[in-house]
Image 1 (cartoon, one colour):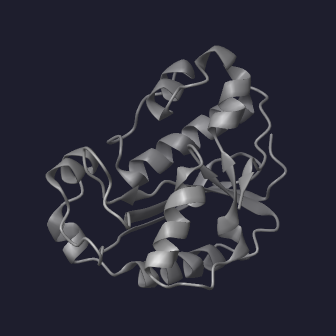
Image 2 (tube, helix red, strand yellow):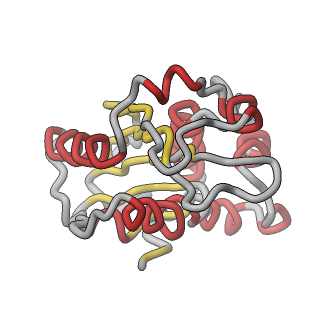
Length: 199
């Protein structure tokens, strides 16, 4: 149940540590899964590692959490190149960068409300398409479906919906695929999938 022609699930991975995250916190993986709006079936994917420039060395905690290695980010393009490639991918899927009839889906507000603005500032990018400033937080329809599980994260949401975790938790492309399954399951259970956040 969605009014959108398409949904794009997005789940960044970023530089991190077991105590305080580095400042600025930088994207190290930018993945997306495109869902067709009627069936919410996955039809295309985008994935790229990103080379951090302010804190180029990943912490051991970050590698253990995400499974992303130093070699993978060392060989990756910096964020401005990946951000531009992501926009080209969206347009190649027939999606306009204004986001008029489609929306991003995240698990929480952090990806597009907090991390992306900080990354754009760190990379001195001022031209941000409107589509990145509005999103669907998948936790909202989940909470309406399961009000007793208001604090549930992605893994608990999967369990509640009787879905299996695919791949590795905290790996962006795998999390994106899992969030896509959650959204589809919620829609099948009659939950509207509509925008919940903006900045």
